[in-house]
Image (cartoon, rainbow, N blue to C red; front, side, top):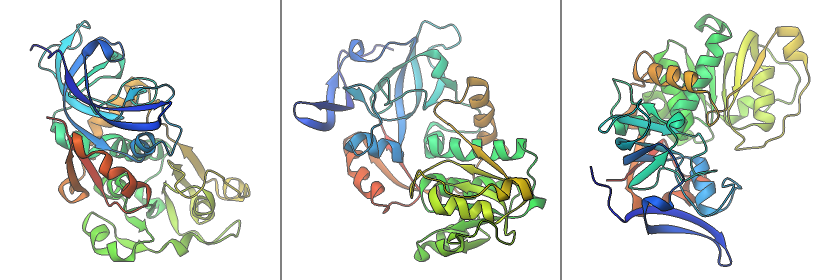
Length: 331
């Protein structure tokens, strides 16, 4: 397939005009170097994308860069024999929209180490409904189960449950056989959370304790908030349960005692989706296309926008007004 001389991309600048971004016509030679050129079909909007696009977070390490930490599409050129023209592929993290040009572009050029063959069982659009958010949720579950966590430990709590990552975690954990308790400050979204797999929907106040230990309530869970909510979740986790920290929407600080660790053997685990090694990324995507594929992707994908409208999503997301996932239609 011939690559056009110019194509559209959402590019982010920080220069004498300050921080600004928008659609620009670009050429292939302006993109970051790489072995694989992809005709992009779909991307998504993550919290990190909103921070990068608005300049409200220090995400980009250099300017200008094309935004978008996720992309799915078809290979149109490759110097790596592992990928051939016509292959369906995807990429998440791996420096996209951080140190190199990302997925908000009709054509994307990537290092082959960042490119994953799209697993059977997922369409390109489904892969981007999942994107970094779903990948992070599934990676969190893999870390917990690798740490010997089972449904017998008790229900898994998910904080920030109405967001993209939280919603997908509710669905993925439920699909994997765990009872899920969704923690949310949005009482009006209880029906939505029950519909995607939550057994119980609980207010944030259940994680408001400041005591170093509470009666065990959860087998573990996924925390997207940080700060006091994470400390409280750890204080309420059952013996040998596991909690994964994946976000800092409330606070990057963590003030607590070591009591949950030394008295109950609780584990606090981390995930870094952007830096996950290739073998681990492939394993997670196979799980997402198979046994852990969410049942409610259509319900969780609450918005679809074109490349020209992607900037409209950012402020709503940063203000906590979005629900579920937004996909970006590149074609």
